[in-house]
Structures are given as structure tokens and as C-alpha cells.
Image 1 (cartoon, rainbow, N blue to C red):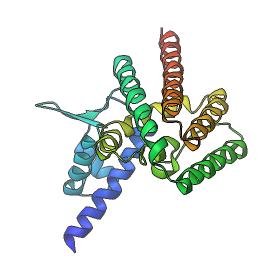
Image 2 (cartoon, rainbow, N blue to C red):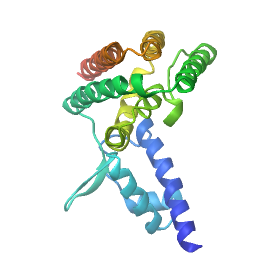
Image 3 (cartoon, rainbow, N blue to C red):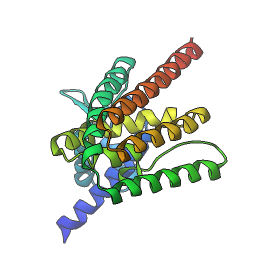
Image 4 (cartoon, one colour):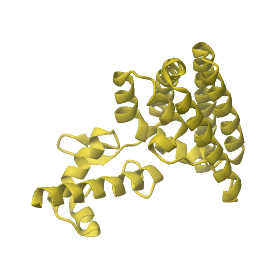
Length: 225
């Protein structure tokens, strides 16, 4: 019972800290203080350390010998490399999914996009923020690629870092409309069982997202000067 309670607390803390890091509530590069966190969260160091270990496993926390842990800091080069590998891997995953997805799964994907569109229209802010997991357009597609090695790498090594980047691009109103239209085209290619075209569209979509991120980075740099 004690072990289960410990695991539950660690899991809950992991989810809370993960959300705070992704949304920027805990800034990039911030040093991790176990004393401060355990006091703020009202928990003992044991489950906190387990939560931090889980965050490190998905690359949201970096541990340096003799220096402790800190929140990952996404530099320009790291983000560029992230989008480069994302373009290749998600493109290939989409190619596979176009052959592997069942008709009911494709229908579910269409319904998911309808819900995204309704959410954007009703929000009043025109912000396109997706929930994690199967409610995420990209995650849903590559989870159906039927290649466990590819899914594990995307899910465990890249996904949360991608979510951090999305927090910025999702705030751009024009990106919401463009994102929905490009998502529709990708689903249509999957529905038509055209793996090559589906891969091309996904790569083009992610490359466009990178161009948006790149502009945002340069704008922030100019404002800080």
C-alpha cells in the first residue's frame, strides 16, 4: 500500500511538473531545487526524485555531474535539429500509417479534426492547442504506423520537446487555419491510401511549422536587443 501511494504521488507530481515545464511556468534552464519543490508541492523527497527521474527520461530535465539538474533549454540549434528529425520520422510514420490505418481509425481521425476545428472556432482566441495522446493529430497518426521502434522514439524522446515548441506556434492565429487545412490534406492522402503523398504533405507541414518557429525566435532576439 505504501509503495502504491509513493508511486501515485510520484506520477501526479510528474504530470504537474511536466505541464509546468511545457507551458513555461517553470522556465527553460532553471536549476532544479529538490528542497524548494518538495516544500512547494508538500511531498517528501522520495516521490519527488522519482518524478524528476521520469522527467529526465523524456528529456525535459538534464542532469549534469557535480552540477545537479535543470530544466532543458531549447537553443536555436536544438530546435532546428528537433524539427529536422521530426520531419523525417513523422513523415515516414505517416507513410506507414497510410497503409496500416483501418477505415474506422481514419474516420476517427476525421472526427478528431472536426473537434479541433470546433474548438478553435468556439475559443474566441483562434489558438490551436492540442491535448496530448490520441487527441493530438500528430500523435494519433504515428501511433498507428505499426512500427514500435519508431513510435517509442517519437513518444519518449521527442514528443514533450515538440509540445514545448508548439506552445509558441499555437498562439499565432493564422497558424490555426493553415494547420487545420494542412491536416485535412494529410488525412485525405491517408484515406486515399497514397503513402508517398501523405509523407510529402506531412514533411511539408512540419517544415512550415519550423519556419514559423524560426521567425518567432528571430523576433524575440530582435525585441531583446
